[in-house]
Image: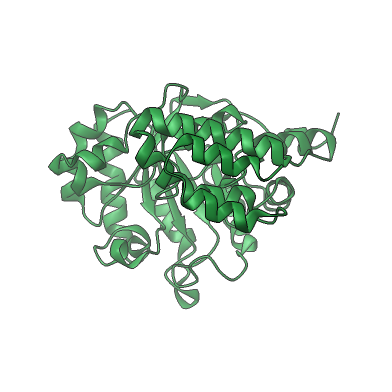
Length: 331
């Protein structure tokens, strides 16, 4: 048995207990019901929806509403909303509650211009007062735990993550998660894990019951272990590292317990891809599922011999039979 097993543990978030501390992060266009199901089957302890527009919820937009549907396997399910103002959160509040989220998460980290130009996502890093008002409204109108996911700041000259986190906690937030980059850095260069360590030290000292989750550059089980072991975070969120490898969560658990983990074989990857397509087809129909799977396929088969040709075949697949035939060429 490893002496590092204390790194894996349940988390108390407000009035609920999450069985473990390995989360699938929200990722627009990727973390739909089907992929979340796959990640839970392979060790994820909590899954989070794709980011959902509060304005879309308020207006009853059906594509927006569908994003809040819970998969059958999701005992615990966090819905992440984004908004640049309190008004849309208030107007969409009842519709949000109708989906019975385990946790309501507020997106304060998305760097995409179409989100930030509305004042939402990482633009809230420049407007902590609005973020605080959203948190306060949610925490005073429901007993559902509330979390936020944010960045270190807008840019390196304006890293305000400590004060931002304190504002959220002072307004009642129950869990904080930080992607260790600024908005302007996007997803490069290397994430600043030292900021995570600093955040953990301060929050654990001043607010003992608030879990701190780390995100950024978790592409393997070893990355996740290193973040847990070196920064002191209470848990991790895998995002891009789970795309093409939903087994990363079980791999982390294996590595913490034994000091090594099994890479998934090409045969296992093919099984996962077929399973994901089946789940997606049942949810949104075969035609759409085949198109949506294209971006996942690239990640699953990247680097394997013959993957370039198979990738082209998968891009052109119009039936499950075409899809399966293309995959057979990898073995």
